[in-house]
Length: 219
Ligand SMILES: C[S@@+](CC[C@H](N)C(=O)[O-])C[C@H]1O[C@@H](n2cnc3c(N)ncnc32)[C@H](O)[C@@H]1O
Image (cartoon, rainbow, N blue to C red; front, side, top):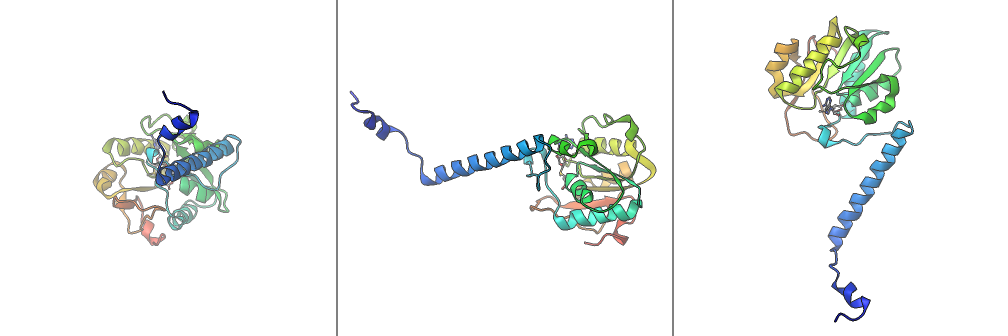
């Protein structure tokens, strides 16, 4: 017979210090994430949004986001319209700059709904399910599709063609393996301007445009 309660306590499996440390770290991160979600639900805009790798989120470095944002402001003139498709970091950078542009962020991640009327819920799998009044509406479109896959780029390109004005500028950020398809779908060419990410990406990543972006945008 097992005697006292203290005997059974002794039998309980003990966690190693390393496992316990990892577990505590996990709970701390989860609590921080929940706090941020609560902030967003209450309409507060957080200082940063953690990358969610399940959504293929790889944020630009500050340097890249701000170079692209300055290029958008330069390219469209004072009252232009800018669509950031699957590129919320660029949108956030533009939002913090001084201008009169109309900005929209097309995103699948609903955390960005905190940007209220600027937010357009977007899933590349339904490329034309965007508000009708956005048809042929944008002077510049910047897109950074989530996957290096033909289907994803083809559908994102459909959205771009639907919302762009006939003479709109297009900037596409995606892997080097998408070069030929990108040209075929959108007539965009590879640029020298280097896209950098906050965290290292293993895939070779490029910037493409349908105009001479390198004349204005230096790495
Ligand atoms: C490669 S990241 C590009 C982010 C960009 N580098 C930035 O810093 O803003 C891909 C983006 O696609 C979004 N995304 C994920 N699934 C999507 C979907 N089904 N439809 C549209 N966008 C999606 C992610 O939330 C993420 O913002």
